Image 1 (cartoon, rainbow, N blue to C red):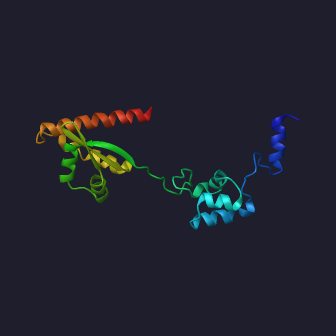
Image 2: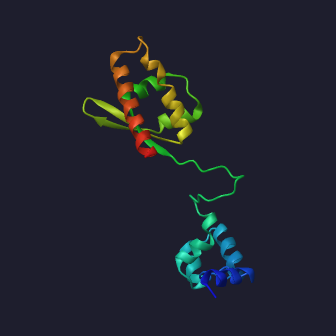
Image 3: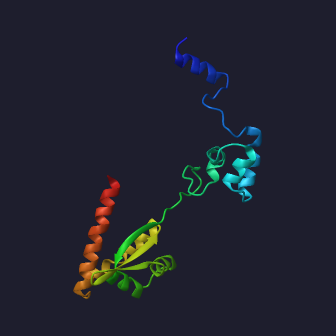
Length: 167
């Protein structure tokens, strides 16, 4: 009998194939409940005499940063760190911002570079996009040349990052 036929016959009998999980099905709910109760992965591995990897596999959907989910659950948004020229940051601090945007700017870290500085900001992509959109007034004639230059340099950096991410 060919291999595919044997696999098909095994599936028809209800066999999934592959290696059996190290944490048996009868102990799986206990492990998951203990993990949700605050027990460490290492402690659970010692208690059940399995590897930490086996425990992580058993509680994979409960771990922080788990990316596979249901269609109903919202996708996790990852913080992005980006540099913003000091002149642009000063302009944005004077503007009216939403609380999330204001918090991102306030929590930014200033890094000195030559004669100027860069503000390292960590924010979710939606907040980052709103901050980038709020820089638009720096293109008008009322903005001082240093602000316009800083905005252009920042725009070029952001565009190159976006292009790299698409590749």
